[in-house]
Image (cartoon, rainbow, N blue to C red; front, side, top):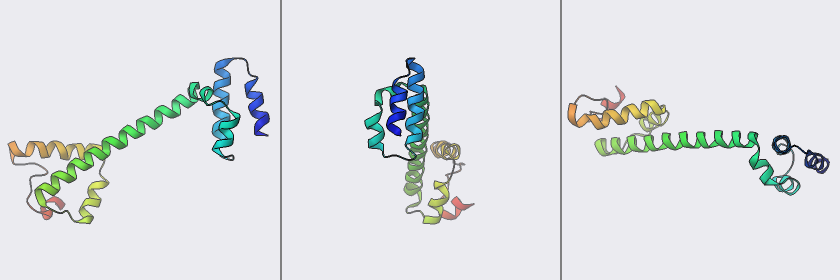
Length: 132
């Protein structure tokens, strides 16, 4: 059946329409068929040119960038805390790991400003100060 659908998609003359329908069919086919079979029946370059594929790709790239930014901020904060306090209790680290990117960035800015203004969110000397 998928072969018949692929053949019907191939017969669509208008390029943009063929690309978009091909992308839709491949996405839906992925719910039921193996990836290798789908690739065998459909030309990958057609899907890559589809606006639907491009939209999915862009969303994936954005999510990847956001996750990378979150991980960088988290790594920086944990390094600053470890340098300042030594080993961090797992329950505190877990609370830090669930902070939003905005909160992590705020902690980072405060940490950088702590040297010049001694009153900062990260200006503490024990884990108790961090909790409060």
